[in-house]
Every structure is written in C-alpha cells, then in structure tokens.
Figure (cartoon, rainbow, N blue to C red):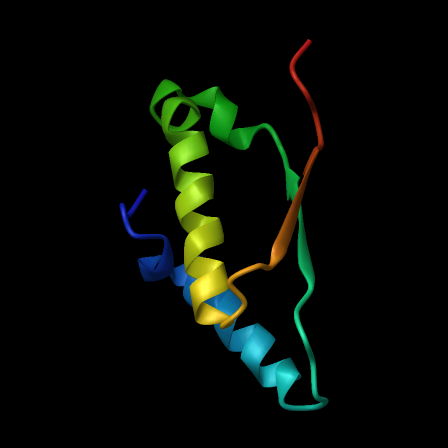
Amino acid sequence: MTGNASAGPLFKKLIKTVRRHSHLKNIKYTGILWMQGEEDSRHLSTAHSYSRNLSEFIRALRKELHAPSLAFFIGEVAPPH
C-alpha cells in the first residue's frame, strides 16, 4: 500500500530478520516460498493492485538480498472457487 515495497514496516522487519540469521552461517539464498491467503481479495483496491504489488515486492527482495535470480514460488491458501 506504500507504493514502495521496501518502505513498509513488515518488509523492513523481514530484511532485518533475514540478515540477523544470515550472519550465523554462510547462507546462499536460492528461493522464497510465498503462501498467499485471501485477505487481499476482500477489498477491490488491494485485489486489483495485488499483482503489481507482488512483483514490486519480489524485485525489492531480490535487490535487498543481492540475489537477482532468487526463485519465487507462490502457493495459494484459499484459492477462489
């Protein structure tokens, strides 16, 4: 909703957590498993911008982790019927 994926407080918390644990071992990031629930589909504004927001999130995450080819796997928790 910020229009900038790396500006949100949850994104910053995610990066901080990943970096904190990365220093424990020499970690190479190979992929992210993203489980999507249905919360964003409850409101038209978030549903219509979800694809764009997710693409921006993936781009920002790859940039922050210095992993430009990081695989991104998406699962659906409650797909539409």
